[in-house]
Image 1 (cartoon, helix red, strand yellow):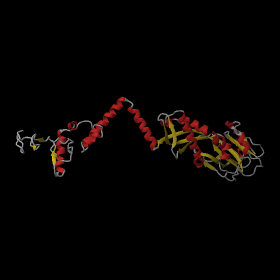
Image 2 (cartoon, rainbow, N blue to C red; image 1 turned 60 degrees about the vertical axis):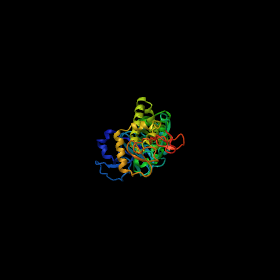
Image 3 (tube, rainbow, N blue to C red; image 1 turned 90 degrees about the horizontal axis):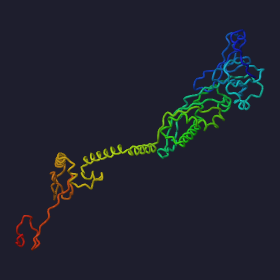
Image 4 (spheres, rainbow, N blue to C red; image 1 turned 180 degrees about the vertical axis):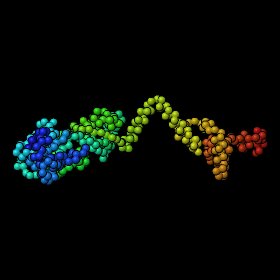
Length: 397
């Protein structure tokens, strides 16, 4: 059982009436990797019999560019063609094996899966898509670790994007990937079983970029390097064992886990503060915000203590407030605070405070120092500051 290339002149003359049928590939969209051949009855001939997918001796098979045609008998390949054109099925001829651009690379695979018995009456034609299969989506289920030399830290990222493959050994692909009961296979139907292998290879490839010192933020622009790493990593598993290879990898987005994002933000902030101009602006802004917060604090000096300004005197703090602020504070205290009971002292802002208060809660000024007590030099009795004689012994002061 073999294929004979049909002469182009045969399609317009009397020989066309002798064709039983022409086999064309079924729909082969961008995401279709494998499809069956369908019979197109010869309108010149009265013979319109035939079962869909089953071909007979003398049938014509049409092969398009970037397609690989398989002539299969009971799941076993009896002949193939990687050359585009028209071919006649001939039961009497030996397998022709039109290698096309594959040259001798298919011989080993052919030796393992070729049909060795007598051809049956169940010949079928199938087609494999040799174009680059694009737009295969992937997304990391778990964060991928990446040591970044710039940040000097182990970071964790999630990546999403697409990749593409090309079938490099269609015989190997048919024997190892395609179910023998399948008549049409899309890449999405077989991608799940290889996605874990792809993600493992992606982890290794991304680690390769880490070893080369690439910053993690540059990963999205390293599609070519990732494709090279992926092809090398998956060479044994995919190219050698399954007949297809990774052509390109495109990362659409990269996201960091929460811990990694904090480390990146911290490192970037530190880099900015190493610039004296930026650092000075940052410090001045922090001080200004601190004064603003302290001014809102009814505890007065306590807010400034939090800013390491407690070594300033209470009077200097008082000077930072305008007279209008003091008056407003006094009015608020007098209108809202309950009248104090027991011993009191009166602040210069007008607030009457309990004897136990060391600072005025309205303006933050310290309690005035108590006047020194006077005593008689003769008898030791306490005397009033304005007394001229001791009320106890009459001693003239």
